[in-house]
Image 1: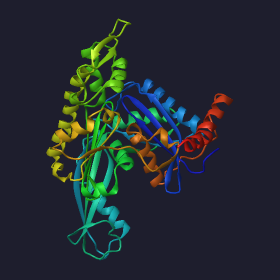
Image 2 (image 1 turned 90 degrees about the vertical axis):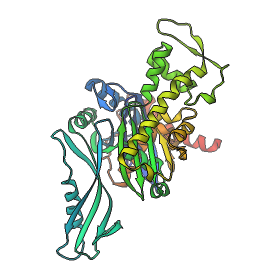
Image 3 (image 1 turned 180 degrees about the horizontal axis):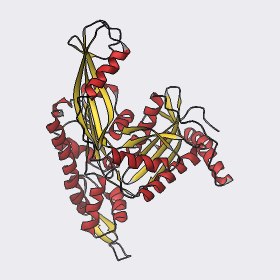
Image 4 (image 1 turned 135 degrees about the vertical axis):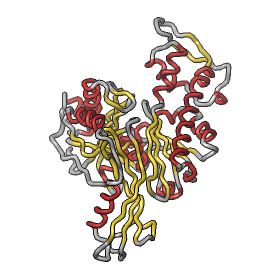
Length: 416
């Protein structure tokens, strides 16, 4: 089956690479295929080994294609990393015709872009309009056709290092997939997990990934701050590996199975198995020790988030609370700890919702960015041109993909 209109989101993270192939259907996004593989060749959202990164991206795309029975030709790709910076700037033009035209809107946005000073290695990734003002009257969302003599705009500008972005684009293209658009990851994540009412009231997104913690603040319906902090889930895993003297892979497993962000949630009597490097027989350690290792690092992450927002002057705008996402948000007690550090703000963990098809595969915080990328692609009509079904390696794979698309969802519905 080749879908007439379909979209793809590619989340290239430090620890995992996720591909989502979907099709818009009756106001929902129907999930057709999912590819999840361990990342390689990446650190803190940056390509450090091009060959390894390309191979991992290719495998993620390949798995999603086999499940969907489609070959994608393009995708929205998420970008992140400490090289990302943001600024809010204004632009102004005079209206010689006395009425705002679409050309005037483009011109005033360009005037705001011109007010940003970038270094030779930087480039503008996004220019996101917050609102317009006509003759000094603010909070105008659609100024075209309005009468006036002066048009102002406030724009949220996101910039990044062009070479870093280009290296990721090259890795994606080498897999045969075109980069239809680069999207800042917290913007994509927000589209999947944040509600419109929260945006209006003022909400903070904290997406705890493997290599970076991405932050976005929305106020009065528009974006007002974005940041990428270089501390995240990988640092928690590294702490565990060093103190418990185990491999990073085993530390990650222990963290996922037994980890907690609050020591208060764990009793002193409970023991968990840990296999030290160079041994085969696990030794039993108190589960509370894991929490004692994890909690300080998670406190550091939330403290850095608070300091970043305070420095940007937007912390007081977050009246609607905090929405957390990413793999790091799934630690037991993470919501409570975040609320304590962030001055008792209400906190919830967000996951993609309102989906169809293989929705059970992606209704988890770790898929929020990939789903958000696909949602944005659908909203902007960025269709990936259908190719020939395939890259099939066997008839068994084709039958497996058909089962996942049709029979398996029917059984899940019957069992509910």
